[in-house]
Every structure is written in structure tokens, then in C-alpha cells.
Amino acid sequence: MPAASPSSVAVNTASQVFDVRPFEGKVGAEIVGLDLSTPLNDADFARVHQAHLDYHVVVFRNQQITPQQQIDFSRRFGILQIHVLKQFLLANHPEILIVSNIVENGQPVGLGDAGKYWHSDLSYKELPSLGSMLHAQELPSEGGDTLFANLHLAWDTLPQALRDAVEGRSAVHSYTARYSEGKNAASWRPTLTAEQLAQVAEVTHPVVRTHPETGRKALFVSEGFTTRIVGLPDDESRALLDQLYAHSVRPEHVYRHQWQPHDLVFWDNRSLIHLAAGCPPELRRKLLRTTIQGDAPF
Ligand code: SIN
Image (cartoon, rainbow, N blue to C red; front, side):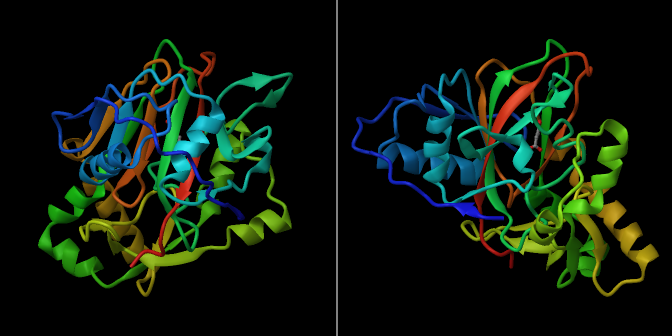
């Protein structure tokens, strides 16, 4: 998967007046009063960056921004990753993946089943994602929420026996772990070419990772992309992963985002897993995603 190179963005703008308002639960905050159509100056950017580290998912309401402005804002955080499914990239903006259930002239306009299973974006890459941004374009009148689970809390509250069972172990992540299930269910998933398959060869990451910026530990496995724990018999690995998944998404670890028009949501894939809750198939849903490259997990 090629990575798009960062661009320089003018940052000599005036400071904006905005608040960071944490949600009631243990994950997420709303950033109120910031207009992302104007490049942020360094001080404002630093506050947003810190809020992202502190709360793991930040919500900016009613952002009237273009795809290029989303790309420019995303690039402030790092190199952008180009999704392997090139057919669902926005025309002239390959840094943007279209996430949508809309079918036009018999062709899906975007990836219709993105996020159907709990996952951390691109955990199947040697360099998984730092974070992702989704910008709402069209929203259904019912459903379509996105859920985020805090994997720092999952680690902090994991029973000691499970901690002992996983600490120091690695797990395999594979893009194709659920691929054929998605294909059978809704035919959203095109057959991968040999070149695409080479871009998503399976990788191994620690089951417990350390956040490279905050130093906090987090579980780093998910039902979407993790296939097994290295060095364990299949049945033991399966049983252990199932316990980790069940613990990870306990209600007290989860923020449920109910989308409003033009929301931009930015989450930390090193701290969270997420899930698209789905909506009735006849209701149109379309969002644009940028994905920022992170470090090799350790
Ligand atoms: C994703 O997993 O990136 C998509 C999440 C969503 O559509 O809510």
C-alpha cells in the first residue's frame, strides 16, 4: 500500500476560540467552536492533538469542509495511507476512502460493509493506522451509529489471569480474515488481485501494545482482523481471543456516536477499536475517511 506524502499547510492563522468538552463516559470529547475549513495555527493544533491523546475520539460538529480540507487537516498528524480497495477511493483524491452503502447503476459507490466487525484500522499492516477521520456526507434517518471501545481501559481492567495469559504474546492480523464473509453477505468486497493480496500479507503484532505518545498500554486485538495468538493451540487461542473481545467491548468501555450532518470524527486506532452499527439497507449512508499512518506497534 503506498502512503501519500504529507503536504505543508499554512498555519499563520489567528487562534480560534474553542472548548474541549469530555463526554460523560470514559471515552470521547466534543471540540466545540472550531472551524476546520481554516488551517489551524500551531497552538490550536496542539490543543486538538492533546485532546485526541486524552480522549481518544474527538467530535467536531457541522464542519463544512471539502475533501481537500479534510486531507490537509489529516496530514497535520502524519502520512496518509491509501486503502487497498482502489475502486472505492474518491476520484482525484486517493487519500480518501468512500464508506457507503449506496449503489448507483448497479455499482457500489463505496465500501458498504466497512466496520461491520470491531477493528482497529489497518491493524493488518506492518505500520497500522495512528488514527482515522470520518466526515459525514449523507446520513440515514435511522441507525448508522459508530461505536468506539477504549482498549486502554480494557487492559487496565483485564482480570489478572487474562493479563498473565497474554502479556508478551503476539497475534496475527489479516485483512482477509473476514473478507469472504463480507463478500457472501453483501457482495461489497471485490476479488483481490495478486498485487492487492501482496499488499495485505498477514502480519504479527503484540497483543498488548504501548501507545507511542502517551506510554499507556492497550489491548491490540480485534474480531475484525486478528486471526490467532502465536504459539497457542487453535482452540486455546480462539477461547482466549473471545474472552478478550468480550471484555474489550463491555458497555462501560464504549462511546456510541450518533451522527449529525457534517460531523467530522477523529479517533485513535492505537487506543480504540470501532464498529459500524449498520442501518436499514434502503437508507443511504455515505462518509469520507482519511487514514493516518502510525508506528510499528511495540
Ligand atoms: C470504518 O470502520 O472506518 C467505518 C465506520 C463506519 O462506517 O461507521
